[in-house]
Length: 468
Image 1: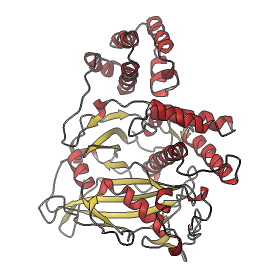
Image 2: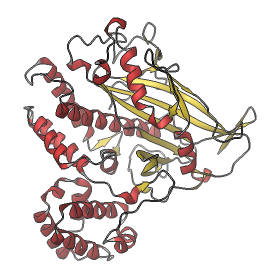
Image 3: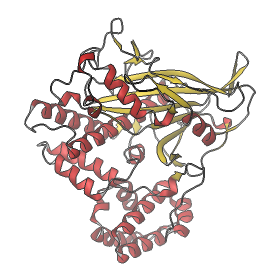
Image 4: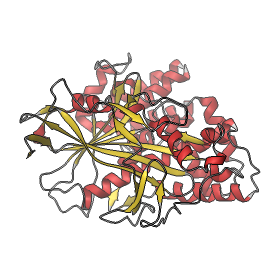
């Protein structure tokens, strides 16, 4: 659908990029962090963030499942486009729908910007991937730290500058020093793109579809959801593509809840990942019996419980979590073990179990079959199972295919020919429309004996166990 406004045609596609930011200053004595705004309940009348903007209440309120979503900083001042043209045509530009900064007052922070594209002429259909890449690469300037030039950077690379800007803007002037920029850490960005089917010519060919069931969706079908990793200048950006049924309002109801949920899942996952990395690298040091450690343990326990909640907004979480918790870049076995050592310092058993789940998700190597490289080409690993992929997806769906791809990657990394051969046998059986239950179970038992780690990876184990 195209909306005409002042001789510009506005595409109903909404582009949102989220930048998670971890703040470790609650673990640091005398960090100089300002007490205002008083997150998570700042005063919209009195509070503002230096260089960012004023605090405001969210028009449609917050959400019962994720606290801190009802109030935000209207961050109009911190990021500016150096050039908002999508092409040489002056009328083909982007328009900012909003710029917002959210915080829980402690560890979790998020900057997000919503963008719509406008064109000088009506377009019946457009290439979704090209549009997303063009917007992601637009040059932006962030208000700089003192003494540093505000050179433009591509939008998708703005995270480190936004983190530095937040560190400086939330610190008392006399306390600003190089150390504070080591305590405020940018996470990996995430894209959320909503569109209507009749607008686009095609989806990215490596986008995988997932299903989301909800008893609260008032439409015949809930939004169609695809996910993939967009390749931008050798960087992989996790992306959600949400096709809205006509008449589904992005600002309220099902799609709003879905958008908030995906955003917070990513933000909390990145925050936890960055905390574990910070503990491993000794970015901050403290006693595990200190009040700071107790506050950190409380956060990790509560938020990991929220992450693994089975249903939220009447939306089944399983299929969402399988992609939302994957790390953008593979974690090495050594790093994984170091994180496990740090987790062992905490006493709460449920916290340890949930942290281990997150490490298992993040340790899963991601197949290059789902990556689009910066030049637009598809990067594909050579695979002994490539001939099985089409049949597996056709007969059993994308989730089963993903499980086999991940299982193959683990087998190849093990370097054990017997494990690779067993995975190949399993794939051959799953090519069939009706695999033999007893045979699938036997092969799976053999694989887990050779490769015990895969038993604890839901995206693999749950899909394979479904067949017996």
